[in-house]
Image (tube, rainbow, N blue to C red; front, top):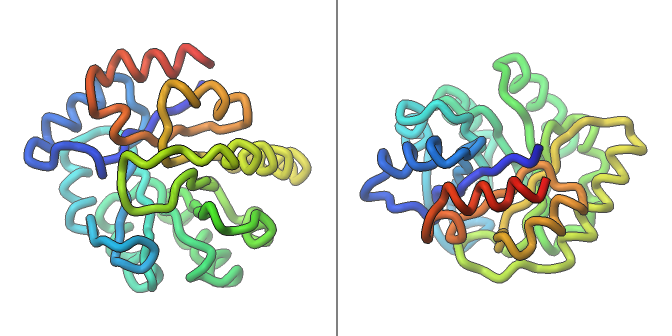
Length: 217
């Protein structure tokens, strides 16, 4: 069944505890947390202390996306904060570093992810896939909620699904950016396992929207 991960980038931070409860009661499967340092997007948001606070406020697994220039410097802090998934960018981590990192994360029972930017060819991440638990397909340029979904993400998801089958691998395919009920069915059909959504879910009745999307499955 398709999994849903509301993105805290779009939540009401003034009432974060209430937002977390709403996510749980609405049938969300993960909490998606984007962490920026200004490198991959022109803003700064959410560090290990924020992740640690969120961990105390919810029973949902924390899906943490590190859009950082030097993620290796902060891995231990994000692990100690309670991350359940840690997703990195191929642009700032070598294949050897990623393989070593994956082993370290698995020893802590944490899943390892790799992000695919809209401008990054899939061929760039293929050498990493054998050490991936998750591939995050960005369907917008990262940094801000409410952007329009980029249709070419559908083919990229389908290509990753085919690659997964050919490798006999089991990594999850996640998509983030402009996800809503108008494109959810196409994303699921293409091979997505996890849908990240921000403004669509937090504006209006989250429970109804999650149920609507999950009915496509």
